[in-house]
Image 1: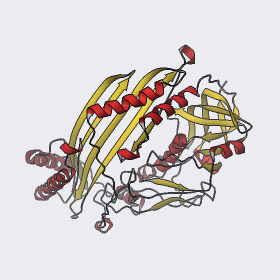
Image 2 (image 1 turned 60 degrees about the vertical axis):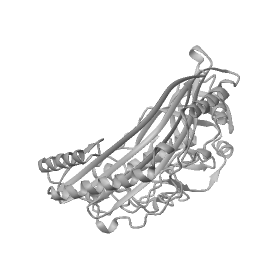
Image 3 (image 1 turned 90 degrees about the vertical axis):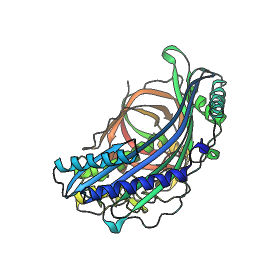
Length: 446
């Protein structure tokens, strides 16, 4: 794949296209303009029951233009980056801007916040992978899982590899680009039959192909996760401690970040409006981001506004120390951008950690949640209720699988009731955390 996709040439081309759009927008009467352009290429394959099901080769490009005429904003986009198409996109954006209402917060981020230091973050590692090789890897993954005793069926294994080049430029004279890759392999298996059937999966993802887990280990892990769910029971309704597995704890961190994002705050649709400075977590808990981490899955030297990224601490020893702001949301709130247009980057937790076994011993009797279904969050009140599955823990030991129950609480109370963080850190995403032990939640079972 990498031989047919010259990322350096694509980057130069996108930068030239962005510069053309900016120049034309200025001549067409825009007071300010910003351009985002990208091109990506990928291969994806899926197999099931030893046979190839799907092969997808993709190549996409886009160019989006946002113009400002006074305090009026218009944007338009196209998948065609030809000269004529770019002129048409700019003209359309200007036409839209002239009919929109004035917005005092509209405009580019301040010029002095633009990134000037653009270090190499080691994000681009193409994989010269043929379709036949991709299929072979997926087949090896599924076969290793299906060979495990007790596995009765499969929903297949999938492998994907993608390469992307993105460019952002604006009329401050800023232009920034980045090249990146992402490779992943997953497997989903079935055990049991009829009403007793269970399914589960596992996956691996990385920027470098050599950092992926082996196909066999992914398949075997998917089988083990599936088999341990057999014989699930509904737990009794009550108030119990809950231990969220790392994949589930990651969702709680996502809920926190969504609640301190500028868009939710200025719309007053967050339970953490006006909570800056309040203590939300125990004092031993700190959470922040490291945008310029070398090789990170969400590393970036600049955000979607061109603002230089920086290490931010959102929760400092339990206290809400910072919101997560773009240039626009910062203006709406009377604050300054935190370099988070487009979201958070490489979220990390600083806290004393304990093994999963130790956390279960501390919990005594409760539930280990390994899967959740549905949304179940009221962002205005923080009320939280999700369908769940996992394991009943008795006297600090896993007793049996449980399913078809609901865990409910309020995020403020859950954050304040955090008892411990696990050392079983899941590093497969931009949010990295171990398990979370919450002191008590409502369990609605039978």
